[in-house]
Figure (cartoon, helix red, strand yellow):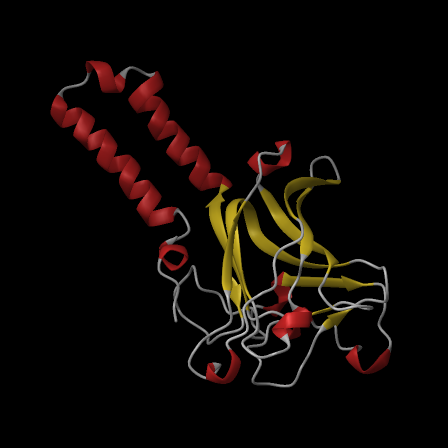
Length: 233
C-alpha cells in the first residue's frame, strides 16, 4: 500500500514517496513540457497539500497513468484513494479512470476495474490542518481480469474536474489483496476442508483445527484491511 505519509516498518504500510520504495512506481504522460516536467518522478504525485505542488500532467485530451509494480504476483480485491487536503483537491483529484493488470504470460493489459464520473472530492476548508483529505474505497470489478494475479497494475486517468490539461495530485493510494502464493495456500486449505469432505466427516475437534488453520493463513499472510475499516485520521 503506497501513500504520501510517514514511513512505517509495517509490511502492509509502504511509503512509496521514500526513495527506497520509489522504484516500484511507474508514471507515463504524453506531455513533459512546462514547469510540471518533473512528472517522470511518480512518487511526487503523492502530496498532502502542505508541500510544493508536484503533479503528473498531460496535454489537453490526452491520457496518463500511474502504476505500481509488486515484487511478486498479487490479486487486488480493492483500493482506496485519498484526495489532497487543500483547495487543489478540487482540480487535481481524478474523476474517471481505468485499472488494469499486466498479464506477462500473454503480454497484454487486463481490465480489472473502472470508475466513471466520480462526484467532487470534499475540501476540508479552513480546518485542513486537522482534517485530512477525503478517502474513498473502490472494489475491483467483475471483469475476467479481476481474478488474475499481476506484478504490475496501472491506473489510467482519463478525466479530471478542471477544464483543459488535467494535473493529477493525490495524498494516498492504498491497495488491498493477496499474493498468488497466499491464494494457493488458502485454496488448498479450503479444498481439504470442503471439497475433500474434511468438514463433513471429521470430528468436531478436526473441523475446528481446519477452521483455525484457514483463519491463521488469512490473518498472517493476507494484506491487512484494518485501515480500510478504520482509516487513520
